[in-house]
Length: 255
Image 1 (cartoon, rainbow, N blue to C red):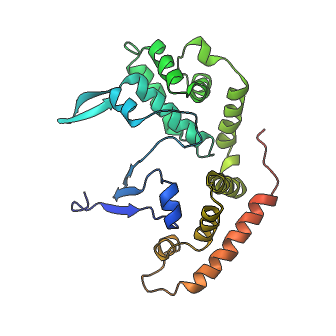
Image 2 (image 1 turned 90 degrees about the vertical axis):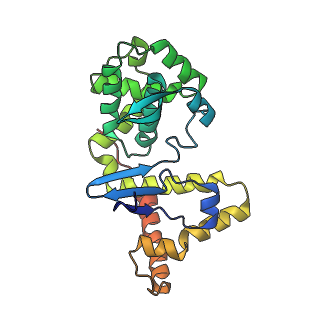
Image 3 (image 1 turned 180 degrees about the horizontal axis):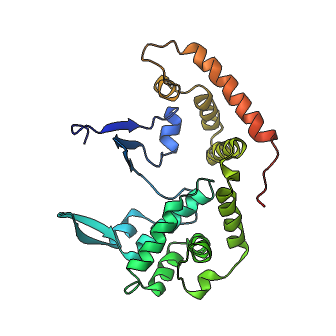
């Protein structure tokens, strides 16, 4: 694809420790014209409940023909679970993927005659993600005209939380600068708490504030021979201001 004119954008890690412990969801992105293809390593976050192995995914795949090419495709039930989990990941991160609601509706519309709801529920329970799936299908049923079994349309404490996150995005509250900074800070704190060793935690903080030169050049659009030292000083001030804003700004509530 590179030889055919596609630009390959690599997501650089800030430090060797970050590269060791935390995988980026899409380490490479292919760009050509207005088309963007993300090569994903995972669609679920580590703090989500799903217990799903690669072997389980392959076990639930079938061979199909797509544009004359033989491909492996998930079963319809597993595809819906996969889509629900990806949407839920972004929903809790204030980065709602509205397109996923369209995908869910189309999956169930096109495959309604063969879709097995009993098997779908068994898979969600087997892989420990029934709570996340219920939240997404509840929203799909209530706001996106998606037909689901009665048990998925029942409101509960977890669906109320999902609905709050949903409207936070739909009303624009989650896209404000303050909400964005709070979200980013919470993610970094979560990564920090994920580390067990005190040495690793110190290295994580140092690598975050003073990342690798390649990361700095990409992050601040610097030329290859740019003098990096003043930009490291700028980064310290930038991160300090962002941390203060994220910590002390009042929380924004949805109406």
